[in-house]
Length: 165
Image 1 (cartoon, one colour):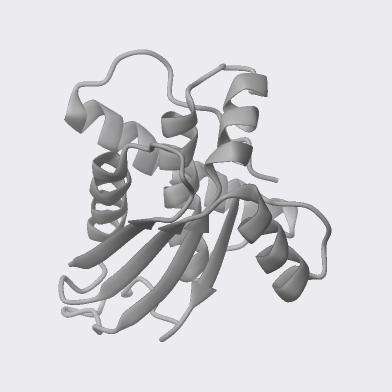
Image 2 (cartoon, helix red, strand yellow):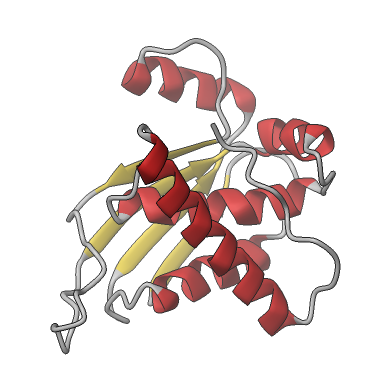
């Protein structure tokens, strides 16, 4: 799995954890091991520009996903998943820090960025949360991936509750 993490935000983030949880999420979703993913960490100003340009919404947001080859998790019948370029996930640590601090299960900026990385991966794989049933499926899968990764890493305490809208 080729995953690049590029921190352009000026904020110190745990890039290794972002890389690790992205790799874990993609493996768990059975994405081809030769697929590629890019994660970019930007400041609030850059995120706001992207949010306006692509979503026509004001202010910075927490995470944005830009799919390329529109890869999907393979069905149970498929032996080998297709490989390709997944796309880009853009994260904003300033928004992540605020959301983590305001979440019911208060958590750190880095924990929120880990959650947002999984959220971004799922969006790249075609998951969405516009409808209630889609939201339940995506957020359930997101929680299972974050919990599995945290257990594998031996991290204790409650997993971050979803704060993404």
